[in-house]
Length: 280
Image 1 (tube, rainbow, N blue to C red):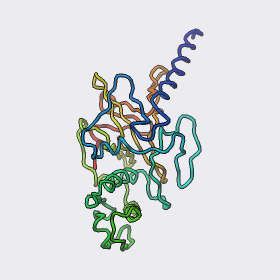
Image 2 (image 1 turned 90 degrees about the vertical axis):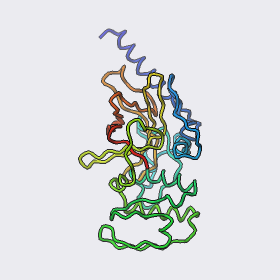
Image 3 (image 1 turned 180 degrees about the vertical axis):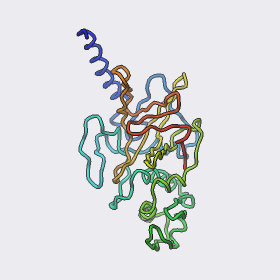
Image 4 (image 1 turned 135 degrees about the vertical axis):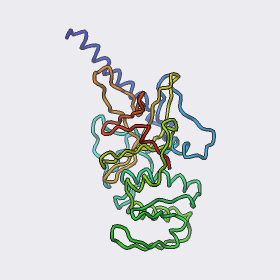
């Protein structure tokens, strides 16, 4: 290959890296203030500022460069694999908030902030829905052959009470219980706060859509958050998906493409809007 071609490819690679970095304002303290829109795209907006949609777009992020907490310890930096940001929500000490529970946490935190205590409820593995406002009265049952009984303080407005409730449901929940608490959506209903969940051959994966941008031609990009197993911080994902040639590197920083067939490839898993889109 002529030397000139090598130089052109190198310029493409380097400029792509710069482009990816330009999609992030390191000083931004929330999803919408840290993530920049690509040229020619508009961010999806809504007028009602009390919605989960807006809560998700405004999620607070820890300072840029904060390491992901992984099983109680800060992760070691890996070149090209660090997230765009870490959501400012403390983990518990029991390794309970794994990938499905991370999405439950986001929904529950929104309802708690809105003081919609009666709407906070999640199913556990025995098929029973555990409602927050009833939990204080004590819940009896058996899950995985283990009997349990809960009795908690009556003040549901106290955050520590809320976190104890979440630890309880997290202990007895998984991807299958998460799916019970979600309702399927049409591909056209993609928006911040929706969930992408797939479970092909029993291998589950789930992410939360944090932001959606659309071009004048109708092309869509999304920003995604994900937890992990064992328990780790909720992260705003970095797009490291590569194309088949240097020129097709996506280089979109936090943005993932919604392909024309409705597929979203995040590297280790591909979601399909027609079958994998849900909301709480």
